Image (cartoon, rainbow, N blue to C red; front, top):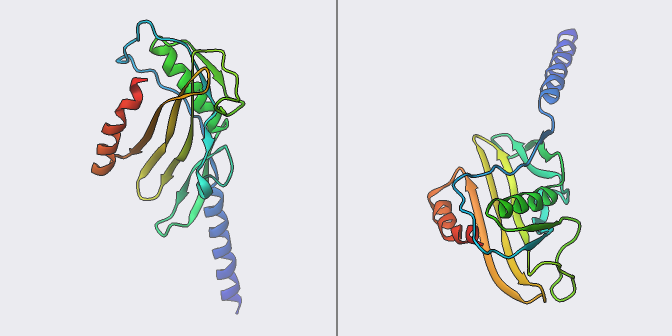
Length: 187
């Protein structure tokens, strides 16, 4: 009886140590400049609005949640959280990307664009919705981002719609999709 009590305490201590080792992780989302990006001549300014979170249960309705760490059976061991809400980081990154291409960009991270109802101070507005925005660690590190991007004129008329999807590591199917969505990098 005493030996089973010692075994129980030892197992409880091992479980406590394991639990302490696997805790939520915080990451910093940031835009990495790309020197290969060409600047656009004569580009008109754009306002970048907050993208709608359409991730469903994937993000636990938490704008800081960007993924998880899972065991081989799919049980979540820890959450991956961003230091700042990912919609804010997305707007900042898009503004940085437009600026790098020579497009004057204004950030509007505090509100989503509503066609014909939201005032825009630039000739164009970029808005959208994100369906997936996650990074996972199972047996390997994986990341997936997908959604829809809309380009509007200053009156709120829709000019362009693009579906976007990127997956790392890229599977052959995901690589084909990212080639077709390469057009999204043009505007």
